[in-house]
Length: 277
Image (cartoon, rainbow, N blue to C red; front, side, top):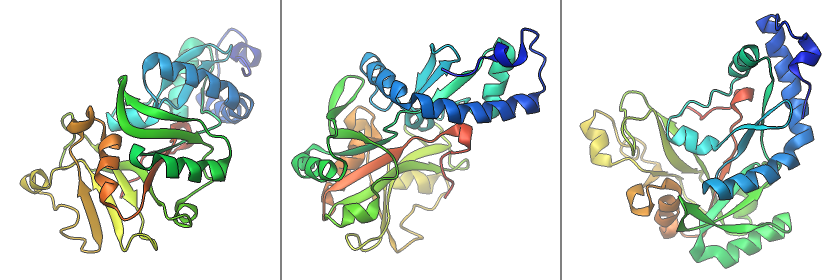
């Protein structure tokens, strides 16, 4: 899998934190490049076993054992701590005298669309990427209205979708400590979908799970009130097994063209975190 702690430092475990952090940064990149396909296959098995289609990180020991697996999207949606910064990994290594490597799959981006547009969007995606597995997107084993495919990130963005009359949006998060809102209680990070203005959309658009009246009651200003150039679709995720993605795609059926939502793995060990807008 990768270099072992004892190969580098022997059994004493006496190593300066700064040296360890630098070593981990180097080894993560090498381990990722050697094991992306392995992670792809391992996560495919784990997604079925755990009934979680968005699993996108496997944490492996230096010997190739799976220490942990997680969905970065679900973790942020639940405001959970990933504990996968380089400092977190260094602390684990010092405590256990063993390296642990977070590895993302070769196909590190998911595309999701409503089953109503399945035939058309499968054609679009496969025409661009070649053979791509398309699956039902289920939540806790419950089938939804959504289809999902996995691709390598960075290959197709808003412009390329617009060329074939498809609206491309990004799944992400809105951060606000003041309002403390969320589907399951007070949350700092709130799921949302963002669509940038294009030749297919006259203005920027968002899909939000937040109730407009509740925002006002807590002293906030609902988006759309202060930003006249923005469209906001508000959805209630409780209608789709408490899943925002499924409900967001239901909510965008009113858009003038088919919609694809994309999410690429956020690698916390590289400083990638949900944006603050």
